[in-house]
Image (tube, rainbow, N blue to C red):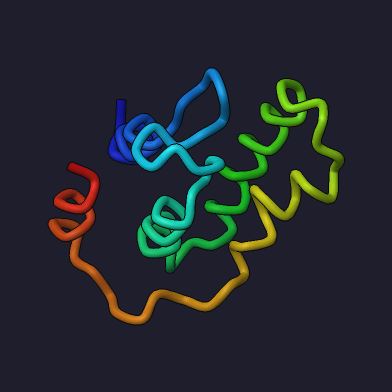
Length: 96
């Protein structure tokens, strides 16, 4: 399991598509912020990753229409960049 998988596992509840940490809809605002930082130089990779989760969620969250799924999993990616650049050690500390 690589660092990305560790970060996702720390915040993902597969049963309900809620954050295991804060219980908000996954991906929660905290997790989104961490992903923006982690992928700040590779937004296309982040979009691909979240597209994968969007497709999985579409199978399990049948009550959500495609517009709702896009808003939850993809539309936030083009949002404003993080205010400050964090070091890798900051990211690891934030996930523990």
